[in-house]
Every structure is written in C-alpha cells, then in structure tokens.
Image (cartoon, rainbow, N blue to C red; front, side):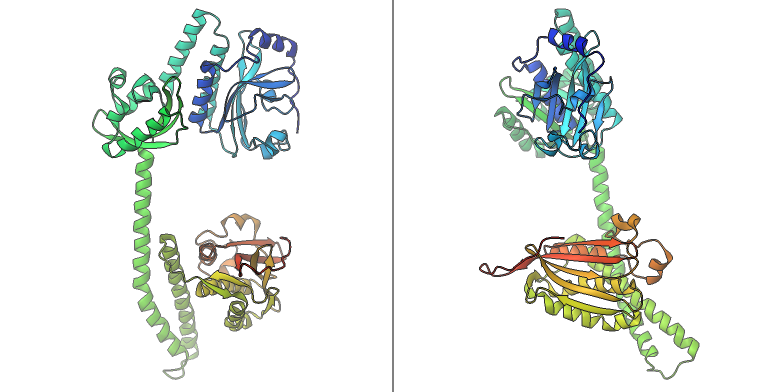
Length: 532
C-alpha cells in the first residue's frame, strides 16, 4: 500500500477546510440527496461526500457505508486531492497503490473507485465526491464528466453561505437537470412530478408543463401499471427501491421502455429518480432472440435433413471399402476410403451440432443415476483401444477411489470421456501414454485425462471451450475435429452438477479435469486429499 503524500499547500488547505465549519456536523439533506442520486445514477452501492482532515477522511454524506470516518493513510480520497482531475481505479487489486490496502482486502472490499476533488472558493481541494463498488468496472468519459458535474453541485452546497450563493446553487442544479442525457426527476411517491430534466421532454415529446400535470401512472402502459404502483408504494413505505423497467406512452402514441434507478426520502415523501430510455436496446434484444431462434431452427432442420442421407452414404461406402462388391482398383479403394472417413467426420459434426442445439434449448435428455465411476472409465478405455493403436499411444487407468459413485447420466458421461480421450490420443506423440485417473479431492471426485503432448498455446486458453474453437497451427488443424467437443463436454458436465477445467504447460502436456460431487450414504465418510 502507498499512503497518500501531503499536498504542497497542506496548511492552507486545512485552514480552508476548517473555515467551512462542516466537520463532525449532523447529516444534511442537501448533501444526502446528492449521494443518493449518485449511487442510483452510477449504479454503485457506495457513494460518499468526504472531507479530508489532518489524519482522517470524514464523511459528510454517505450511502452504503456504516463508518463515519477512516484513516487518511488508508484513504483513496487522500490521493484524489493531489490533482484537479478525477481519479479512477478500475480494479484496486491490480493497482499497486491499493492492492493491499485494508479497505480493499477487508470491509468494505473496495474494487472500483472513482473520486473527483471538491474545492473551496480559494481553490483548496478539501475532499471528494466518490463512488465505490465491490466489483471491478470501467468508467467512461461521459461518466467522468457527469461525476465532475455532480462534484460541482456538492461544491455549491459546501460554499452556499449566502442567499445569492444558494440561488446560484439552485440555478446550477437546474442546469444539471437540463443538460443530463438521462431522464432525471424529483417526484412525489404518488408519481406526481415536481422537477424534471429536459431529457423527459426530448424522449417522450411532452412539454414540461404537461408532464408536471400528469402522473407517472397515467403515462405507464396498462400492463405495467400494477407493477409500477407497487413500486411506488414500496418507496412510500421507506423501503429500498429495486430496478424497474416499464413502458411509458409518448406524445405521438408510441411506447418507450424506461429503466429506473431511484431512491426515496420517506420523511419528505419525495422520490429522486433516474430513468433511461432502453427502447432501442429492447428492440435489438428481441431481434437477437429471433435471429437465434431462426438460426437454431435452421441448423436443426438442415442437420436432420443431412443426417439420414449421410448415414446411408457412409454405410454404402463402408460396404464398398469392406469388399462387398469385390476387389477394387487401388486408386478407387483409396478414394472410397477418403470419402468414407469424410462422411464419418460430417456425421460427427452433425451429431455435435444437434447435441449443442438441444443443450442450449434445454431439450437434451438426461437420466441421472447413482453410478460407480470406475466401470465407466474402464468402458471408455476399452472403446478407445483401437483409436489408441492407430496413433501408437497407450492408455493407462489409475483408480485411486474404487467404488466411488456420482450422480451422472452414464451415456453422457461416456460421451465426455470420449471427447477428452480422443483429443488426448490425437495430440500425444507415438510411444507416449495417456493417463485416465479417478481420485477424491476434498469432498468431490475428480476424473482427469492427462496427455504428454505439446500443450495448449496460451493465446488459445480463453477460447478453448467456445463453439467451433480450434487452436491455430497446422498440426491442430491436421488432427481434425469439429471444434465442438469441449464446448459440449463442459455443458454436459455442468448439467450433471460438475465442472470441467484444464491445466497445461508448453511441451509438457495437458490435463483436463472433470470434478463431480461424490454420492455416498449419509453415514459414509471417505478420506480426502488436499486440493492441488
């Protein structure tokens, strides 16, 4: 952790801070409403107005945090007041200044931070308006500008010591409402608007006067009205408001999808809301779903139409290759052999596509049973002996957990092992061995398939389980395959309540690991080993 250094103007800065007479004062609605709005507008659980004192940062207003102050040495805000710019930390664990900070490693588990400095009239930076999230995230240039604008609103409140300054603050607030691209509003919990941003007029086409005399419920689509009324009633009871999506009628009769973030002050009966027009997003999402549906139907139809004639072609070619029509000329025999292999590869591809389509649509049948895994491993090895001989590779089985059982679909589990074994055999050098192992790890069973091949290129790791994924390189392409096996295998394992991952090293081979919950009677206790 790197504690923030003191600014060059620290004595003057502290004097300016103390002249505000705000340290250790009670909460004030004029500041509280800003952090509530900031929390909702940026979608973060924590928003603060902080004042950086000699040895602490004290919170004048806060949302999502119980503490009233923290040490200045541990503060992010101490870094913010060193420059006039917004400080953004997308992921504190990746930033050497904060990675071991107690506010990162412990409560409140800061991952994302954005803070903009607050100035007094003489230019001293005395604190921040800051946003905190427990998840890493990006922060756009538009969001930076919006945070800076809200910080200027806080500054106006900090320095609003005269009636004229208060009027200026109000003017700035109105300007903020006018320029925001989001649909800002202050409304009663009955849905009547009290103040509106111009984005409402631009989006729905009504004048501000018309909106002020129209209840939100009157604008809402009849099908969404009950949910909206319940949402407002929830706010009236002082409860935290969840996200809301509903349709509102525009002046031209069209319906606009709005997504809401809002907070309520139940004592005042006021709702502070930010609505965003997501109509285009909804339209694109509907189009995407329709395209996916059409694609799935097309793939399924084409695959079914192709599989029947291909099966017939493969059978005929197999018979010819087997000599049913008598001896064939050498060249014809070679060409029929090539055609037979290619027809088998096409059928495997079609079967994989059909399995994937069924799995994604939830139509793939599973018959889960409490099965002993050892015999399934033996069956998989026996089925691949011929394949192993083709590549000059041996398969060894190591069962460290005999009689271990798991809740699996036997056929689907064998399909997973077939995919993993065939890959391991294809990429193993002649004379090497592939190890199929069953062991206990903690409370789970692990089935691993280990090869001694070239390993998986690091650049391909993130795409390994994607559909139609194959590592680049002539050797990988020459080995063949549909590029669907691993994607299907992971889906099958997850449907059986397990996980599939891998470890690999260049020129040292790859190990794929299937982990499943072990099934055993309640009274049974098995020894385990530590997770590697």
